[in-house]
Length: 440
Image (cartoon, rainbow, N blue to C red):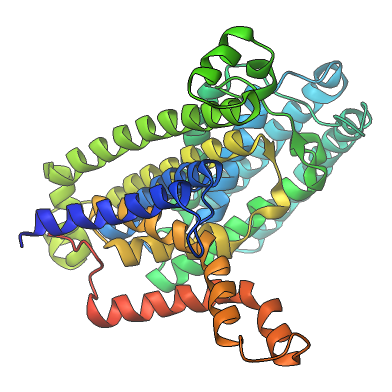
């Protein structure tokens, strides 16, 4: 059997699992097309995230464990671009926040300038300390009153500055740009670190991003969340109230509620598939290009690449920004699908560890492997819990209904997700160390 046939069969097997979720109610399959399409849509988004991480690790060997932060920035982009502006928020505190940000930037520039042009010594240290202290005082004097004014505007429902009111689909590339900008700032300072220190730095910076989203209510409403985000597809209730759609659904034997739900989820699936295919095509073209061959040469031997005159740090920065931008796009898509931004739900387990499992299992350095890993691991992440319940029920069928062991196992079935992810990693690393679809 050729590699092409084998890899195609792997994709077909994952597609079959998703189809069985909608077609049958055997064992742990739900028999619900709603559930099947939810898994499909999140699988598409997960595949895009895995593609971004694969660019950084598979192409360049960059160990970025701050995926969560870039995903969250993509979600923030939806709020800042697609939501309508909060009435009165800009006039109340917008200019003050802008001036505070400009003041903060000028303070940093002034401190860096003094560092570059003055020799080491007490005078330079004193001057830098003075610049930072004065800049901080002015920054807070401008920033704090402006934030209080914005957060005082209808805090129960708004209390944030709002967005630009653009079509929500435009927020996806904006999410990529926002994540790319953050990645550039991070890369300029952190990419000189060794791989393990780079991992620690990116994880710490991701936690800082999440902390900002949780606490800066004027920007993202913090833990109060932003709900009711615009959508690129119709709302179900609008379809249910449209006689033409109701008649169309009836032609397929569907009631309006189920028909409208499936229609909306299929609309999302079409858009997400289109984005994935475009990004996959671009990644493949990059992989086969001279630039892609150069990136892999740098990954395999930095010393030899430097000896050939390659600017390793610059190339690392390029691919770090590109991979982070893809994660930002996926984050914006996921927030659009959810219809809300919930900063409290971003955690490293879901948005970093799981994505890395997808890349490693699928095949680091192979774009198709990353996509396969995204679908497979997401399906298992969702279905392991019902599978565990079925298995525990079968294994404890001989115990009484009041058995403490049976009750304990049932209560802890959800933890089988983590056990299963670890087991899959061990099996793949033992029997296929380069992943299901290895790099050629």
